[in-house]
Length: 195
Image (cartoon, rainbow, N blue to C red; front, top):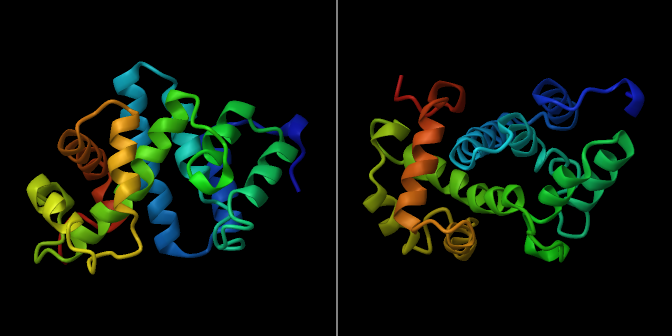
């Protein structure tokens, strides 16, 4: 067990906590994808890149143990507060799902909401391509697949649209922005091309 007075609140600590709570490789890859997109948004905004990155890694750290709306995020937020993570980060994480009722009242929170579902959708859109290379996924293809309710049916398209609107980006531009951020770590995500 870690104690708040001995912790550093950085990317390494976030990755350690994620790995303690999450064994599933795909959930870890999702966290890495969200981290990459959050870093890119921090650079775009001139914000603290390391803070945005840590929030990206931590946003679903409790999901494997708490996969329901009644427990996910709420259980994780409690742990983060007990460990002394910055309150602004915890609030951003709480706001990434509407069911918590926590308003997205910071750029960090709005960016997290904007990238969460989109990174999952981009991963799915990449994996159905013959080359399995995220860098080659056309924005038009993503927009077309968003209209197909059977494709990646668990991804909330309304959240993707609202997320882009909340950060003031046109949807096609945001799709390209997140795709390019994920391309930077494509090998870690398993999206660098078919073997």
